[in-house]
Figure 1 (cartoon, one colour):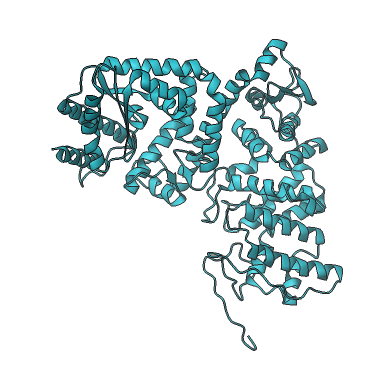
Figure 2: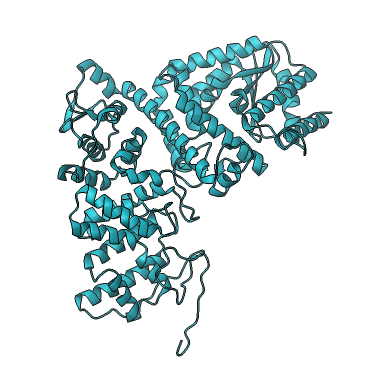
Length: 609
């Protein structure tokens, strides 16, 4: 009988998820609603058949409690009682409820206990505390379920402020393990930064009355994340939360998706991830600022401000605008604020960013020296990723660099890349910043890293397009004509060294001559390209800059340096063996191609070949 009941549930689930030919296919929101109704009906029927004792309630938690189940979400169920029923009887009831679900292979997380026991667990376990915020009665004594929900919320509100550092640490650890929803190729919709778990933490802060309920943008982001996760489960036929580029194309092709193609879907997802991450980050900062001893002391002393730059101050753990800062008359103020944030490691105050977004005048061409220096301070900092992301979120980065719009949230189209193109550029800049002491022109290295893929999405030869964009950008920034040409050449040939090292024999003098001819014999450009090649590869993903690749490029660069300085050309050097999956050296292919082939061919040396 138990098996028949569970089989009926599984068949009904499968009919909803994958309807037979000719039957109506439910959209993602309607499917979640139908799954809630199905599980509620089955659980209530099962509870009635088992005979749930008086003073006992079956409640749903998690996705089912929130009415947000994906097709293959686990069921989170709790059998809670008031203590009047014998413990043995409660255990038998729980077993009769859970066993058919487990026998049918349905994912289940279950627990039992009295109202007091369950609430006591929530005081020790943060996950339990947050789960109990989603309590929803399914069967049995509704009064017991309501008592549990009210007691759990009271306990959470009473202790949430004192647990905020634990919450923030848990969020940080999860994000570090799962990466970002925005800008990461392979986005974890559930656990990633800007994903559904972030939204649940935000909900918990709202339930604790520590922050205000989020607005329409966050609600729209939640709906998109839920819909994509629902469709990802449906297409995979199992629980899957990581969405890859090929998934985006398949989901976009689903009838009624509302997306023209996978790129549009990926960009929408990136925007949703940014919205959620920003909302939670701002909420955590706000709560922590009032919960720490420093915040309390600041409240007692009154508002203390420390000047960081003209018109820029530190206050309450944030970098913001001074009260009298001429936000509507000082075009370099945006960059001074950003540079101060980069130097101190403190976030920019959202209110100051909004003020600048509303009032900041455009920087006219050419930029003044001060503005360019502040930009380079941002690009050369450890915190460049966070600063650029904050400016992006406020709409200020796109004003500084209108060219950025074409690569914003753009999938790279290359399976080796972890990031969207815009994030790859910022990551490459971060890696370049750690290597500026290697080159005679660190400013051009940083600008080259920021712009080297700026031509992607604009035509087949992204390097040529990017070079022209870099030339125009250099003029706007106020670079000298020679520096503009160096920057444009750096972007045009940013793949020259790794491609040549892979595809041609570095020991052949003709190889060195071709490289130096391409660079016009410029030793500065050679050093910039060598360092940019490393930063570019490191920003691509794991395995893109291997010891083998580094040795090949290093050997080629050493030979080019020797020719430029008139020193003897180095002899052959042993190269590390290629690791599994690395591209083979391709013989006889010219340097005009901008990307390495997917499949390499190795030819043995022959006399006269």
